Image 1: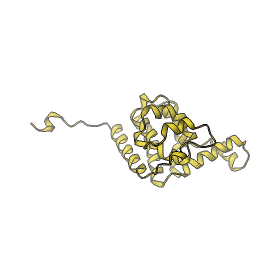
Image 2: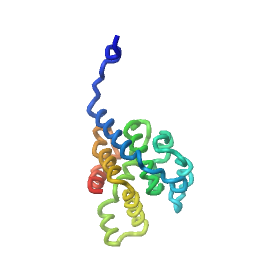
Image 3: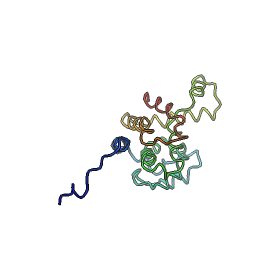
Image 4: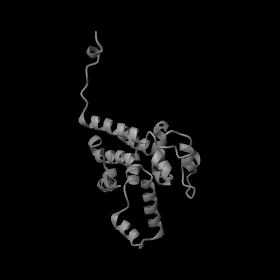
Length: 185
C-alpha cells in the first residue's frame, strides 16, 4: 500500500497557504541577521535587566513561546539591533500561536506602527515635548536597522495579517497605518 493511500492529500485553505508562504519569507529574510551580542539586548538607559536575561545568548528561533508572551510589552526596551534580531520570533508566534500568546499581537503591532501622524509632524516642526520626541526617535532608530529584505518580510506579515487572523481585534486598530509606513520604509 502506498503512502498516498494511507495519507490522502489534504487541501490547505488559502489562509494556511499564505501563512506558510509569509513564514518562509520571514525565516529566509532574517536567517542572516546577526545576533546583537549579549551586552546589546536591552537599552542601557532603561530598566531592561530582566529582558536582557530572558534573551541572553538565545537564537531567535529558540526563544520559548512563554518568553515571547512575557516580554512583548518590552519590545521598545530592546536596542534596535536586538529588536531587529528577535522580531521574527514575535511575528511567527503571532502567526502560528495567536490564541496562546495573550496580548503579544497587540504589543507587536504597536511596535511596528509609527507614531500618530500629527505627532510626527510636530516632531518634524520641533514642536513636541521631549518624551514624545524620544518615542519617535526610538521608532525611527528601530526601523532604520532593517535591511530591504527584512522590511519586505515585515510588510508581507502586515499586509496578510487579517487573512490568517480574521478574528483579530485590537491589534488591527492601527494596522493600515503600519502597512502604509512599511510600504515606503
